[in-house]
Image (tube, rainbow, N blue to C red; front, top):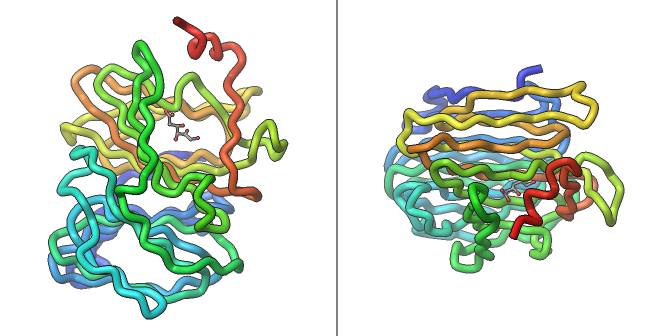
Length: 271
Ligand SMILES: O=C(O)C[C@@H](O)[C@H](O)C(=O)CO
């Protein structure tokens, strides 16, 4: 089972280019799915959600999102994800139609999770994001929380952006969240959407379980997706390149409680 989905570039509607489309039909994921779309200026994409909720993240550019008689105009805060400016997102509840119209050339990520529980459509402005500077030594990273578990605005979805600069590791020391064992650990699937700067860069990501029945180390390139159905999932960033990824998480309970690999937990305790 490959966990790596390399970028596509398929024009699915006039001015709408499909970069990624990972879902239950082409992956083992049950709680999470993702679409990444590049929109030419003035291009529009619309969809009616089935029994899914969605988080529409404006990765780059300016768009207008309409859903459930609400219209959010001119949202999006950056030209590149590497501007490191928290961007705007829109949460759309289960079963609703939505449309996205690009005011400038734009890139959007749509995260999905199956649910029949309705939550209201909501604009999640970038300036409400909780920002974290995690790690030390060579595992420093910048975390921009878009839809963390302490915002009760979704039934299942959790969304977070992570920046890992040249020569650092993130999602490190390795942790897992694949046991439904609250309050110690929650069961959350995870999807990584990766970008690199400069674009020709790559990162290494390993996904592995305690018994190594799953143990895959991948070379991940710009706009690739990695799925984490279970297991630890560290990311290493080579010298000279900076990494961005957006994480989508979801599972039976919308809480992020993870378990650090015991043999590597000492990494956290260094002074
Ligand atoms: O802290 C990080 O390096 C990011 C990770 O926590 C990432 O968001 C993840 O693996 C969540 O389970």
